[in-house]
Length: 181
Image 1 (cartoon, rainbow, N blue to C red):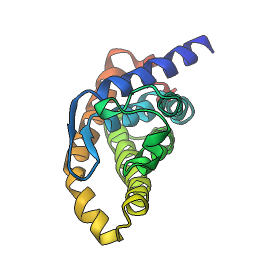
Image 2: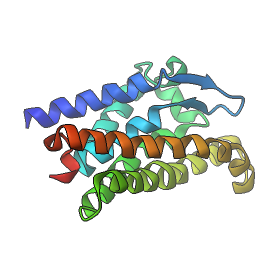
Image 3: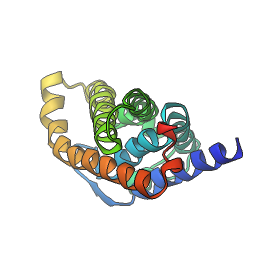
Image 4: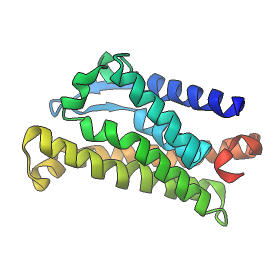
């Protein structure tokens, strides 16, 4: 139990730290950061339950006002920004990635992690992100996709990194990839 609590806290901190890299705010109001890589890793490494809890902890800390999002953003105001869908989708994306990881035990860890990260970190996360973006900026699906579609190649790179990092962690310390236990 104590180990799980510590891992949830460490991975919430990892997501916060990844918000600093590279920290580019675009005109669309949606920043380019590595935070979604942290969300993917929460699911692929910790599994559905712990991964979802780690990201939920991160979102709660942001809501309480801690400046953990890109550009030092935090507080309830971020839930009225174009990124609201991504923020709300973070825990669900991590849970989904973890669930997929747990269900694909017959695949090699790297492949399973890549698939899980793609489903949770792109498919699920962008579903929420697009809806939030469309609602906050009064955009159509096509208009939102034109803006947010430019972010997908970077997220594909994050998917590959999540697969490689999870596989390397599984080789180095198999018991640390809780999604496989």
